[in-house]
Length: 329
Image (tube, rainbow, N blue to C red; front, side):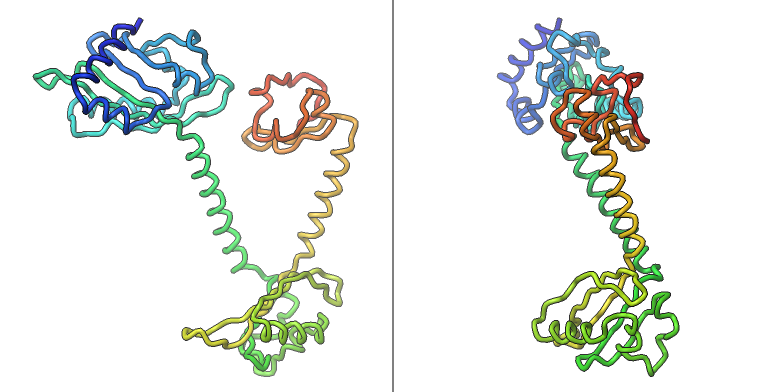
């Protein structure tokens, strides 16, 4: 099935250079040729099936053979796009479609098509090219995730009550400061506020020394500091300049990281317990994909590295959920 279409395509390429240009400018992750007068006749090269994890004989070259592994929403959009292109040659047939890989993962395919028409303009064949854009889509998703997290962190920083921000001139006089709950006894309008009384719960001499060092070296300082109350803070001292580029003074920020350190210690403790446990433990995220597996779990399933499982699911790896493993959601 489809052999005559392959031969016809080769003849058409010889006759019409624009067809060759379309294939060349498209993608070589798979090309296909469809007989619109006999819709069950379709030819597709083996590359497309390989991308989806299928051997050449696994899936017949039929217009309907792939319908069960296409995302329903994307298939509907692709059909609408196809019909618009058939009705109007100037409308591009270009669609991004999610396919289900044989192992259960999602593969993003960009599908471009070109209707080949008879002398009356009727579409009689469709020539198409596939491009695997999964890596691009994953990069876009990672970017959106990072961008969202960055925006959320900035909003949290703006609203945080555990961060003190102090603006100083070059003589270390306080120009303005935003208090945290530990410095709330001072206000932005309090003219008597000084670096010493704002930071009285820290080592004042050390802070003065570091401020002068930043002014002399032009390099910011970031480090963890402890206050007299036992809390842990992250301190950053940096220069700020005016519009002309001249140094105006210093900005100091103190962020209370006591709770974060406490959580980090808990996570580290839990990690050590799980990593050295005799039972196999795995942690999956809301998508059902592994984010952590311990040594015992790897031994049970014969894996050498956690990297072989992270980002995959128990289903895609054919792991029996009834086996004696502990999966933590």
